[in-house]
Image 1 (tube, chains in turn yellow, red):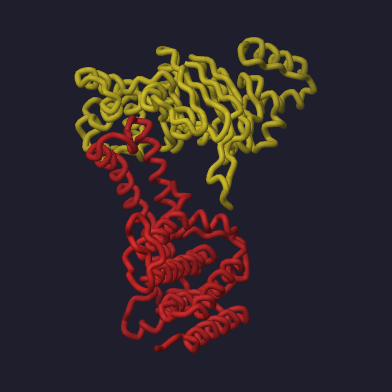
Image 2 (tube, rainbow over the protein chains, first blue to last red):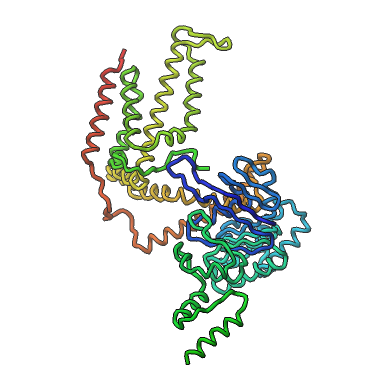
Length: 287
Length: 267
């Protein structure tokens, strides 16, 4: 599903001393099936942006289009539930939303709310538990007995079981150990590819943005600061540092190398072999 | 969701009222609430009105914000007025509305009760508008100090109060987060039959309680780790001090009350 923002403003507590403009004239377009990373310093409006994606909030002005759904100010979306069925959001620390007596019931909660048939639910619970790497023997346990990492997987499975077309991930790996982080991100990437999901990842990890995303959106103070493929965005290290963001280690390494050898090293992401040649050339020339 | 009611909201404008000693503020409000019931003529009501409105002006909090914050209370005030209009049967009949006679006494009575109600709400809301929760707690602890003689756990009470106040915004935030997450999983909090909506609260309450207990446990541990042993021998970072402005406020208030009592119609 295509996602389009058109000059979206969002203001918290308008007309009070606490008025705060979270989004300011934000416009962008994400084609269906794309993997977009949204990065930005704390308070740049990322969370507010996410809440627009399934109609939890409506823009103060401007409009948001998600597939055939439209969000406009002062007009209640007619099919909010349908929209939420299509757009699954994995919030930050999603394990805080667990509440059922068993893991199985908790994963089934979403599909049941959206009116999925009972025999289909059982199938989906099993599938999504497997997708996130949960042992099926855990299904009858209470979610509160599990470890933090397992709880996270249960919560993610609960979102996947709804089978959304758009998957929104708000720092899904925060607080996990490095191995768990990679497993979860690889799992999302696999799902993204297999089911042609439109995926939106909010992250602080520039490495993740580079590895998984094909498109990148940099926010600053509720405005669009930069947009483009990650390899292009990361070329502009200084501009990123202006908004307290860094570039992945590989770009830092290349920049240092270019400076050290006084020769530019060009990296466009797609050709690692050429990069290796260039580096070899540099090393050779310095012998 | 929480921008309708201003009760409990602190607005930092650093006015003279903000800098007043919380003990004095609380004392004034306490006695204001008592003495406004002694007012029974135009002079005393005028004095109390000037005091409350003047105090509000001094806080430098925008009027519009206060008026908006009092929205839920406006309804009660207007309702009280209308109720009095039709129920009280004193004085002479002024007009007939839909066959119901309106008495002059009713008009007076309704206006007076509504005014009193409005002033009470206005002045008491000034306390939280201009005083941080920490100051309020310090003030309460100081004012309840004498009860210590009767083995009343004043410090513990104040601590409990400040912890609860401290966690109100946190819990509100958490509630919003969890309700967003559950709404995304298809829970409908706003429409549908009553019974459905009550059931929709369970996925909200369970995670909220779980996290509240977790927080309580963590806080208790953090306090232990920093050697908290109760109030004994504990000193304060900010000692409360009565300044000239506090004395001035108190004197003005006493004059208002005295004048109201003197002009009061005792017949």
